[in-house]
Amino acid sequence: MVLDREADTLGPGKIFPDTQAGTQRSILSTLNSIYDIFNIYGPILNRARLFLKKLQEDKTITWDSLLLETLKREWTLIGKQVNSTPKIVIPRSLGSRDGTYKLVAFSDASKDIYGTVVYIVNVFIGNTSFLTVKSRVVNKQLEKKTITVIEIQAFGLATETVISLFQELANQSVVTPIKIMRMALYSDSMIALIWLYSYTYKFDKLQKKGVFIQNRLKSVCDLCQVFPITFSFVNAYDNPADYISRYVSYRRLQKTAYHSGPEFLMKPQKDEVQFSFKVPNSLEKRDEVPDPEREDTSLITV
Image (tube, rainbow, N blue to C red; front, side, top):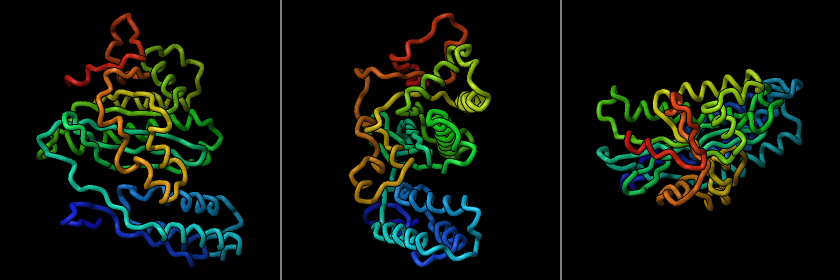
């Protein structure tokens, strides 16, 4: 990672995949040589990742066999598009260690890729900073599943990522932990959110769902035992994870809030009505079921 001391920014070096790579092995090698631990270039590299997946699924293509001319031209075009991307940097400073923060994750899925984008928000000032991105190319097991099931898989990745960040930043084992008072996860899949809500508050409603779905919902709930997470609906337009789940060109990416975070994170949302609920179920010993359209604010006092 490159630190600019004057501008106080941080980012990977400019990326240069080899456009002349002509075998599956050399394409994998040049993609793995790109060092971008925060996935800052993630949406721009998605097309290359999907191209490599296509090669790996073609049983007629070995690791060292030369690609057909049509495939080679396709890779050259992809490489040139990536190479035309200028260097991207993000602000290095996330704020003071004695501040109060919340971790906010966004998840999304397409038929090809699912992923999560995580930001850290200063609760009282409202500053939002890019933290990290995780994404996975859909494997053969998930290819046969519906988008909603893949969205549940994205929930698992997002939950695992924010819990891991919480433990690295605020765990008691950290020398100088920061104060994280809340964690939230947003998705634009209402069906996936309803499945998780039903599993958390009305378990009997999901008895007919398959083992695959049940296991992933249970995994999300188990992870939330470390620290409660509020799950909420967000419009696709305001969901930055939409860009990590598909290919996006640099020209389009720079017009989005992928690196800066959605504007609504910096504004109070007390007057907005959203489908929102907390996991784990803090009311599981009560007879009442919470209204999912009224956001649970009890986490603010954690």
